[in-house]
Image (cartoon, rainbow, N blue to C red; front, side, top):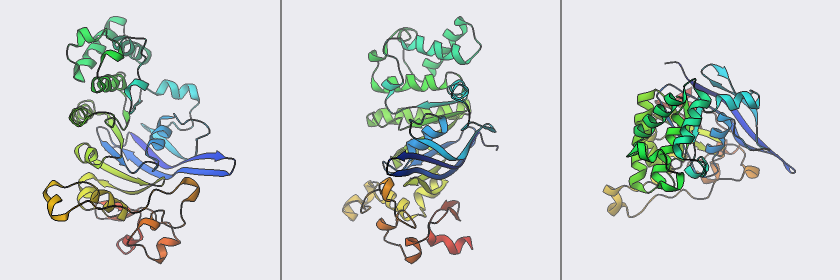
Length: 325
């Protein structure tokens, strides 16, 4: 199936007085229509910056310094600001972690939906009103006709996130970037939002880039998963393969951090990854994960591995060099 989004060797830099910091370094991936790609990693791995770079919302002085982003075959990373603004919301949209940052507190949710639809689609006001109501029903807002005239503060956190998802889908975009869409919600509401995202991706054929630090959310939602560390993808593959047969030591550590009810009593605790994510101005030579890796050897300290095939996945780890050969 043809890719709707292609990201190739994306590099994001932040110029500073002490030199240039590389926050995203050579990231490549693609998305097919209706596919959900989970992007997972610790805070500071570069997940959100990758999403913001793709949709053209990097805050200065952050900038894309290399690579390409193609949406439906068209390069978009070099578009003028106004052209990107017209594209954003129409063919590519974003769902943020805090729905209050995406909703105007001075307007009813219905008016915000109508304005988004009228901005991007050639519809009459009556047709836009009908579509806004349909979207509210589709994302599970009970009593949509009455809630249409409510303001954002009159909705719970979970319901506000549903409204934001409706806004993201208003113009029927080809790609939606969801940045930690369930983090601010309690567990039961998280499950509802996950189910909603999955159903909408399937029903609309929308490709979803789901950014999260929660492997449980990835396991429940994604078709494929990309694991990021220190600005690079260190493993990417089908979600079941990555979860049940992780190939990179960092992914193995992430999976070991997830509580397993059936083994909790026998094993007496969780696995812990020693150390922390390196600062952008102190990324080690060779494999960035080597200071925390129990399986490192001499080559890991001097040469940085690229993604290489291992089973159904690809991992950036010298342990798999023989498999590539």
